[in-house]
View 1 (cartoon, rainbow, N blue to C red):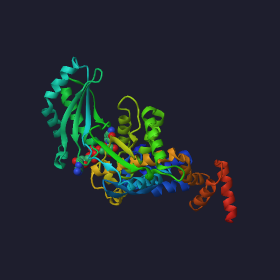
View 2: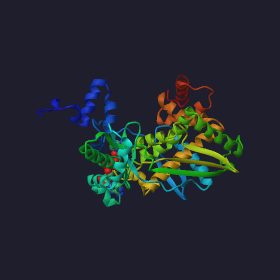
View 3: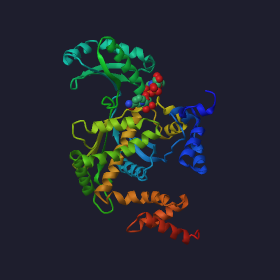
View 4: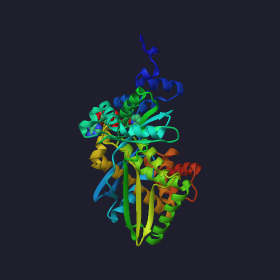
Length: 421
Ligand code: NAD
């Protein structure tokens, strides 16, 4: 490479890339300055073609009680109502003694997929007999995990259609484990190829059914009462909505979206691969062929019982967890010290998030609370400053109809009143 001009885009510095894009897409000096201000040297080590860090608002859910311990949990999310709803759900469940989280399983699955096997079921038995050798190959491919007490510990063999799938079960200890498992699965894949098999894929499955986390809560009816509705009526309606999410995929998708609002936000703030948990959760929601709500609510006697089980492939080390200072700071705030604790707390946030959403839906409707917070974003969208957003949102909350024109009009009225126009 003789000069800068010959460097490929990915070889350029972040500042050079920003300058190129600035020219090509007409970015203003202020826009480029803002991007430069948010750029970090560590970020450039994390992704290809790095430009800057894309920030998300971070807040905390307070007063969340899980297994008798009170947590303050950082959540990173752009949707205005999520943390407020999580706090509301945490408060309701804390009255009832908090969420109970069972000890989760902790194995990840690597799939080694073969095709063109003459007799899949005979070959399945043949593979099962070679378990010890397969585990040795896997462990030799990633010996460092054994020093932490982990490693490949088991195999299963399945035969979906004409494929033979060897599932390698790996204890990944405190890591999420994708790279660890992929390395092991590929080593086993190479060994099977050397034996003449046609290996079509060797990769982690995000359907982490050996890392299931269960959480539950038992609420008294007064815990869910609202100003307008008795607790027993709210509880009955929540149970109806829960049933609807078991039988209607349209409702189930939104039910689960609310749960994942909480879980994803916790996992982002904990530096985890939240897409991995999302995909596992969504697959688990459809495990019986019918896509269902992940959390269920039943009235049993004089209690409202909420339960949820889902795969939680999380980690406290590995990946990019150690690459951001804020992740370490967030771990100090949450005081989460282990993978089982992170899985339990994240799933609990999902459950209380669902409770808050269903209670609002069962009583005043989702928009009342949602819009109060949404109006602040609407205010920013029509050009309000951070100082103007609160007062403008209050004004919008009192109007019958709010759209962009109305918001702009109210903003100019506000400015006139404040003598700024
Ligand atoms: P990793 O590659 O960083 O491996 C974990 C490392 O931590 C290992 O080297 C291990 O030896 C070390 N370690 C130190 N202390 C440990 C302890 N107490 N327990 C366990 N390991 C310990 O990360 P990973 O967890 O193997 O993979 C996670 C990364 O892979 C994430 O960045 C994820 O986004 C990415 N990824 C995900 C997928 C997927 O989900 N399908 C696929 C590929 C990659």
